[in-house]
Image 1 (cartoon, rainbow, N blue to C red):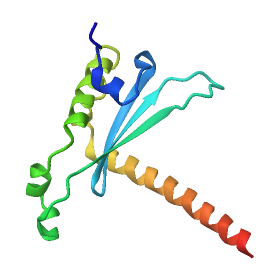
Image 2: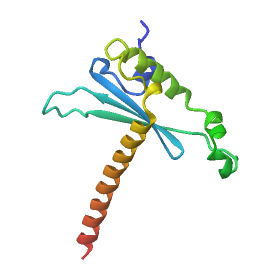
Image 3: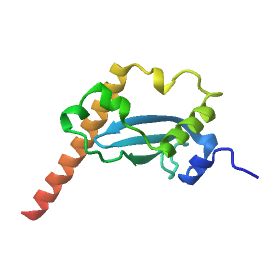
Length: 135
């Protein structure tokens, strides 16, 4: 018997019925896929899983890497592409509302900015605690 979502299973995702949504964003030299789950209140299971797919290193000059042509040339991981196809198939019957390819780019940028602000705030607090512990 073949698995319905083999790529997702290889990634360690098995609770297909509990997946609520997914987000894909780019961080420096990697693509980050975050899969979110429906969880009941008080559940000890994680509400999301994060997967990072490194982009290949290149000998292309940095100036060219900042252009639109470079972003069109850069290739994403085949595993990531297949995982996105499977996630789209999995969520399509339940949620036709939000397709990642048609998301409003301004909204996505705002969400990325808010995420970065939360990460930076947590890191700064952690560093302050470490500094205070040294006194």
